[in-house]
Length: 128
Image 1 (tube, rainbow, N blue to C red):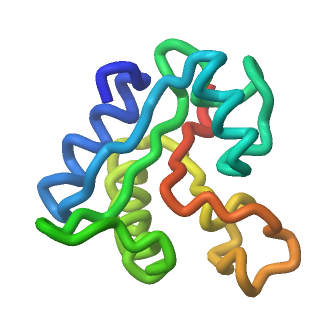
Image 2 (image 1 turned 90 degrees about the vertical axis):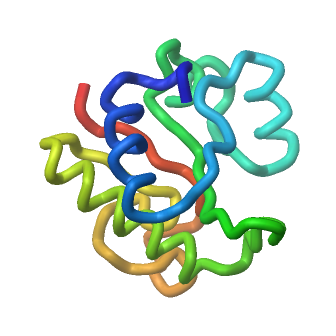
């Protein structure tokens, strides 16, 4: 998390008081970004991704349950986590968007024809 923009750090530090989660990644170097693209975890090539700036304008987080592996298919758990993050960001006056709802219309990527890339852990800054 230390590699992330201070606004993301502030949001995450407040959100963790409400719901438990793990930070997966902030900044991605070229090698990490190339790997993410190759594994189809990102569609953005280096250096254009929000993870590629330093400090990073994006962070990947996942719901955390002790002694349980991350369930990547539990979109309800990811959605609940992102709802908390969104509320905290709003309270702090920071605009963010999520890999579950790229266009911000509150429709799931699985049901919204405008959404075609699922990135459940992804949170990024919209403000400059």
